[in-house]
Length: 475
Image (cartoon, rainbow, N blue to C red):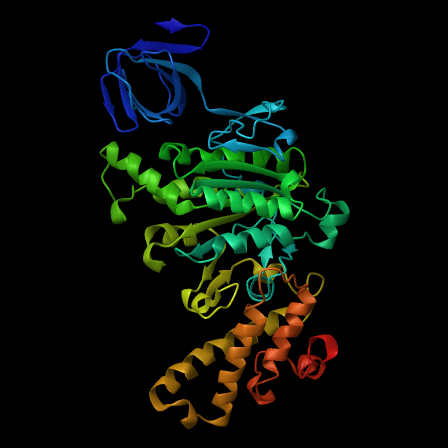
């Protein structure tokens, strides 16, 4: 029957209950992504949304699961609208569940407006090209894979690697370029939206404690879908977080840094729903629309004309078995503007952050560095460090065959420079916050181990100015 209060329909009884899915028949017009309320025999309400519609039939995913629901005694109300989230600047400093309901003991935030959580990717014609670098204080990023304001740059990690610590360090240390600090509405610092999907309680507490210790908690909005929360909520969590992000960035002019962890858990939930619906599986059982689904999240990032704000996205995903060809990192790499890859080998050798420089990439780096942004020698220095470190790997492979003592003197200096690059440039600890100038100077000290004639990617003027720099601190 029609329910005026809800603007939709209510149906008594369902046709089938399977996993988190409820199939409802005997319907009139019901829309895709429409919100539903599933009422059990005790009158308790569980929220859901329509996944699929047909003639007189709707498939509803129930966020809290279907345990305890019976076919005869279950009522389903269709609200006639898609899922909405109340958004306001008051949500900064608050903690919400995966659906945007406060779980920090505070009151419901006073909504400045209601926004559809599904959102839309930014229109390419309205985008402003990202050109302002973000200083993270981490040399392997600032020097070799510079993050740019409005970029989406994922962290590719593996089980047991310190991706959480690295993300928290970036959040603590990331600062806006000087031009944005003076007139861009960010005060030099970011507002942060943190969305957790299927993470353990200790991971969520780590981020909360890290934000509190750095004084960032008052500018952080946290959306937490933990490991023991319903997996189906994970499909909504990143969209709810990005809905608030878009409001803060494009309506309130803030620069917002979004951390999404762990996108692999999100994709597992998507695969679970796809299998229950009986869809034809693609690679490793994931649905064939995994690419477009991920794009609907990642593409809600950037800068738009007419707004001082921006959205910079830092998704974190764990690669099953450290396999970078797995569908989740593979498709993510096609959508985003690069990737930061963590190395298990460097981690086992005690190097933090264990960033593998060679497979890492920031596709927007070239437009955010150089004179007027970082320093005039940045691009050449980065290219030389990359080329030299790539040759170090070749020399190490040769040394494993013929022995290090059989190498030429030049190759032995390459080995020494490789060790210095990993220990002094990449490795810096969890608390060291380097300026861009300190990062570039450290890179030059590493290059100074090599003979001058090996430096083919930098100019003679740059060599004359920076080659054989004194050690940091003058000692």
